[in-house]
Figure 1 (cartoon, chains in turn red, blue):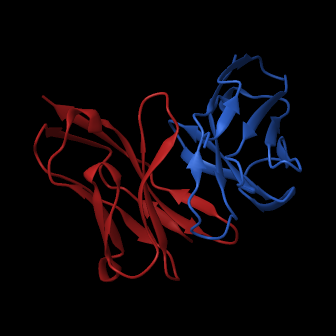
Figure 2: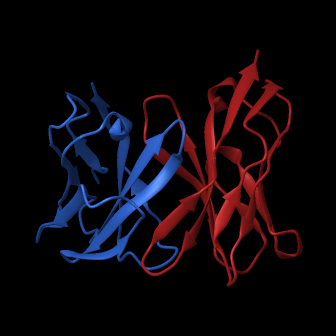
Figure 3: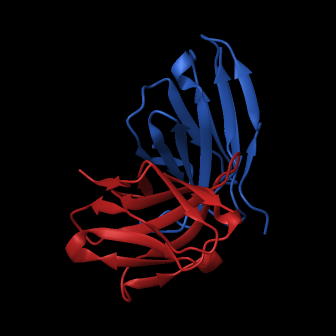
Length: 113
Length: 114
């Protein structure tokens, strides 16, 4: 069955430090992968997505993610975190017919000033 | 373009009642999906509608139902509410609903069941 694992429930980083959020997926075919961010009381905002081609994907707000098929991973990175990046981050894979998304459990990011 | 809108934003109901939530997709989008978000279960897919037809359904009881109108607006209904139905219900729209089509989420409806 398709699944997404985000091993880190909470991560705390200092403002200006680099960030890497981990995501591992299980899917038989070529995965369609997404990273979304959710601020408190808000819906989900798409940061970036990967379908095929270049394995390093650039997104909004200075985020990037690297697809590694051999490791079944799609980790999200940012070279320098800003206090406004504090939010919950979700990795997702598009599965099945239609456009169903299967989400990971999320990683709550706290940024220390 | 206006984003996905959901009404109402907050709802308080009691057990046994029923509730209807509404979602207006981005103009031109024909696919609408619904998700339930709870602290315990995370984000779970409810169902997807495309051109007024349910195309995909998640693993939820029959108390959860939905529909889509000819203007692509969608509603979801939960009958005989249970305490465990308390959640944030998110609606997402996409252009054609093909696999990988970007889904744009609304702010959600926070349902509290007492």
